[in-house]
Length: 265
Image 1 (cartoon, rainbow, N blue to C red):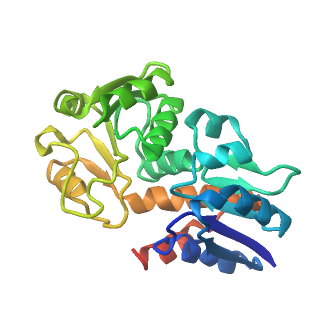
Image 2: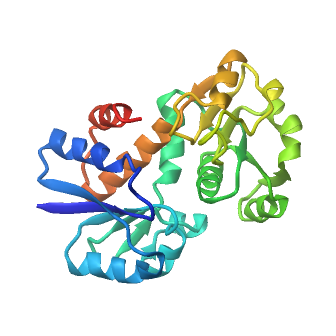
Image 3: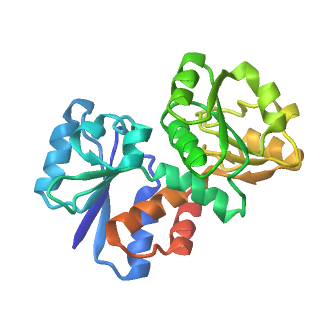
């Protein structure tokens, strides 16, 4: 039996186990997906222990996505983003990948949205970094808006053609944008939106990475404005799809994974 899992702290809320186990069942793979919650000071021991025990692959979530970079051999994209969310133990040294970027691109692709326009990414943390690199690599011109403007500028400096702003710039950025990604936690615990509703418009595609509530205030207001809306479940789904394909070398059963995910959101 193969064993895959998730490393984070906390992980009790994670929807990854049912999503991945639905994929194994659909494909007839003898595997389990287990959530692990090591102490933040024990990440290195956790990665070494997973390799020693023959675990086949791990997803990595908060607060370990950046710290695990030093414990694996990251691929080029993960190194540029500065975060790893998928570890493959298939070689002599664990390899690190960032499937959050694939989650962004494939969520837009699923909704037939072209990525070669003007994009605004709200947030410069882990999800924001993945979104900004993913969109820039796909051909978009990226503007990053963040509460701490220095972080937005720092991220923009790493991406060709990108520029950084404070949140007060959203009023001028969003009306001219084709793509909008909320990569902050705003909307996760309350009925709030990081984007002024009057800036939303019909020529906009909006992806909200928040998935604890499928219909966030941002997405409700975007729908009223006539924008195309993409909930955070799609990004979560497709980062998991990319991880499954990385580990198994097989096409993921997207419908089965999505069904298991939607049943629990």
